[in-house]
View 1: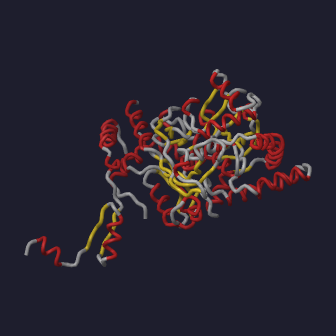
View 2 (view 1 turned 120 degrees about the horizontal axis):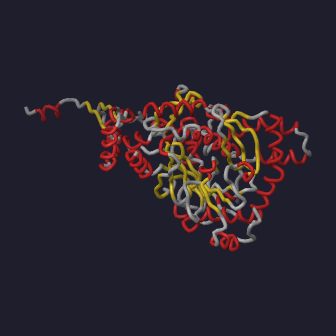
Length: 74
Length: 409
């Protein structure tokens, strides 16, 4: 049995990143799911990411520590 | 580098003590205010780009000052370059919605007794047809004259007798009573009245004067809004001008543009088009009637109350939309873009956790989470007034431009 088939034949445990409605839908189907409230850095804006990288190169920027932790709404 | 500067700013904001010490005519107390100066909410803007409600408020202020007898005469003065427009924020002041302050208008004087700086704010006119929403009818002007001639001198006497009223204490207590002190000020207004009323009565004014003032205060749930804003201004100005500080010290809107100021970037504004609030409309009105966001009142969110403290005010969702769970979610979300939590302003339902304080430009950009603001919605035409209330987010562009300026330093 391939790994993929193996996965689908077992009870699923899901970690959902980002969009919360996926978690709710899985919960409704009785799937064990943990939600992580994550968003792409800078909301996915490439220009902002480049600017933040420049700032990081020029100086220590401890404010950017927030990149390392998931965001929270709960 | 940034962290140290930001911490210094947080200490200043946290230790600030805004105390209401006086009421004086704007022209006699606000720095660099002249007879022909009109202060306005938000970042700088010239007449031709001003929105309807702001234009209406300017007409009203010029008629109130008896510089013009009609909107046409007011426009003539403006076009001849005889009126100086400037943002309230650049004159240590704040005003809700149009935010218009002219020289004869009485303003609250608030002293930050910890750091010595002063801030000034207009007195809330009440609801209905009011200047701050761009109304300029005869009744609006008459009401402003009553505020100047009777309300302000009487409150001034009471404030003097009180020896000063600490507004931070009132805000702190009101957050425990269901207010967020931007769009909900029911508790804070009541607490203020409880403090001022004995002094007002002991001032021995004519009974009918005391009665009119007591009624005016009792009938206006938002009276404290202008005090909340001016107190927040005094607290945030204490943290402005700190080298390398990336914290936002003002967010404000003039109905055309949204602007922010950053502590370490001097007096520059970083602007973007003002967004329109999403929320609930009064019967008969809808989004097509709404003016883009307006007012200096987002100084409350800059300080960490208002939308940032929505978890303290579950009932506000009946006014701005959403559910009490959303209100908690907003407060928690804002903790991702702030560098500290307040120990003076706490939220009972969150185990007395402090409100999120110190919006960091870098965190906003890193997370893509934009500051949330509770706001009133003005009709886009002058004179109609408030048509709803809702929630708005500060535009990303302001923060992007601030970061560009930080990189150039």
